[in-house]
Length: 394
Ligand code: FAD
Image (tube, rainbow, N blue to C red; front, side, top):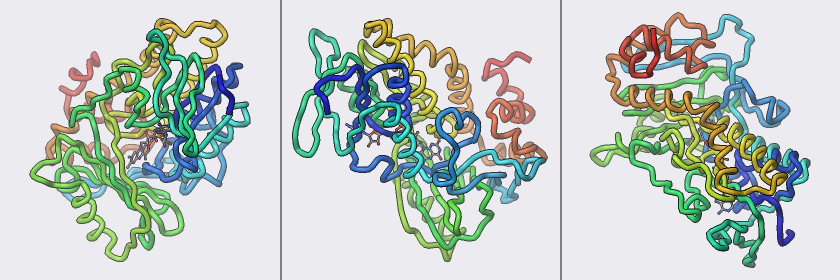
């Protein structure tokens, strides 16, 4: 490890690896540090991702695909499952990943682009001089060091300390943080190219339960619940255990993971002088689904390219860093706002309304619900007021 780089990226999740790679491809010298000994392990994810855009970041390889997805089943409280399949039965719309391999493949790509990667290396603070960020304090194998850099990219996930060290308020209200708990199960019997969702108060108040196939009779079975909806001592794991016992009485749990999912629509400040925040560190996951893999890739690319430009210009001012935030807002701001409104709509939804919406989805091609914009149109047929709330003129 050298004493100085143009850019230091903290955290080798998807956001950090992609940011590091794009910064290096743009000509910057880049250090990527990861506190765990292995990138991608342990995972905190259900590993579901849509196919669109993925090729931009990584060549599609069988080694990190656990299962290709061709359809979905939505279960609502009245018990009638709604099956959504594409008209073209062969079309693949999403993947359930092996994130342990996927995340590593993204880091490999960064390394090939010239990024220096160090695992088992934690950021322990920022180096500040006259109020300016000048590098990162790191701890590696018990040894503490200071590594200089004019620009730091915080990609250290939902609990981002980098953001807090820079004085950015990262507090999440209970309504803006979901608790996700998931089992990897084996000996489960269900369609292996299909995802299942269970919605409504009976299954998961203000959230949902998912079953995502992992191939070979295995599945990710999990629940995401909002802090604000967890009442009377109820715990997400109790809802999940209840579900698992009924749905897969012979299933065996072989792994468990859990974590917080930010569903606030993003931090107000994604940057500071000499700093950008990407992925979950910027709270950039989708407010309605909680999915954040794509958001991590998108924001990583944007921040990485902006970092390379800042290095070329020798400009690490607050104004230069803000370009990243402006780009994010211009490209994804509307989508995040709309999905935040949808989240709030979902939270107020009664079981009766959930049943109605499921009925409206009944004869829809699967492609229709993968795009949230299409989903909005379908929901609008059930509840016209939703369009007004979303600010859509009709
Ligand atoms: P992370 O993947 O969290 O990576 C952050 C990295 O930073 C970690 O490797 C961490 O070890 C490292 N780090 C932290 N602090 C330091 C430090 N001080 N020094 C060095 N390294 C540090 N999203 C989807 O799209 N689809 C899903 O199906 C899905 N399911 C989910 C299920 C659950 C239960 C949970 C909790 C989340 C789920 N998500 C899902 C969200 C998704 O996992 C995240 O949005 C995604 O991982 C964000 O990527 P990231 O790179 O920003 O952060």
